[in-house]
Amino acid sequence: MNYHLKQSMTPGSWLGLALLLVLLAAAPQAQAQLSAKEIIQKADELTRGQKSHAVMRMTVVRPSYTRTVDFKTWSLGRDYALTYITDPVRDKGQSFLKHKTEMWNWQPRIERMIKMSPSMLAQGWMGSDYSNDDLLRESSMVEDYTHELLGSQDIAGLACHKIKLVPKPDAPVVWGHILLWISKEGFMQMRGEYYDEYGELVRTEAASEVRELGGRRMPSHIEIVPADQPGHKTLIDIQSMDFAPAIDESFFSQQNMRRPQ
Image (cartoon, rainbow, N blue to C red; front, side, top):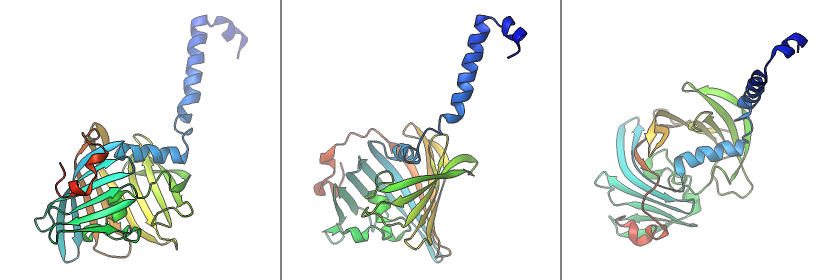
């Protein structure tokens, strides 16, 4: 620094300069210090929480028809999840339960409880492009994959981290690898590409309509498009979300599947 400039600076200005240098040095590193796994974990925590209750509508679009399914979901950590269909009438009352390592489907029309096998996780739920694994959250984006930060890309006008997820050996997952775009501000999952074990794209997810749900800003609309079926897509609309429902482990029982209270 120039000697005369150095002599003319007061202790107060020295302090201000020091603080400015610290802020400038820290600002670009705030998110750079997060690992790819930590970014995925923050995105997962945004939508999952320790427990949650949501009201949703699913629209299944096919070349020859469109149908909607209204449903409610509850979750507690990773071990418990319950989904209850409220509409249409022909499917009303059907429910799906994850209780630790077991998964069940209650079908009221035939009054039958069906135990779901792991092989059913990749199947489309209710004839949609939304899978049983998506519904019951059997696999964990955080724990069942390794994570690699590939760079940055703008998605829907938001600066996003681009992250590659590769399943760990023996993990209970249905994908060969996944690419996710997580917003740098708010850690929202804005796009996802899901590939099979041969590296072929299976489906794409695009999120939009960010708004406040349960006190958190997050996308409320998700469009799922299979790669090899023209004219097919599934739309998920989150109508409401509560991250503090009055539920505990006892809520997630076969008895409660018939009419969640």
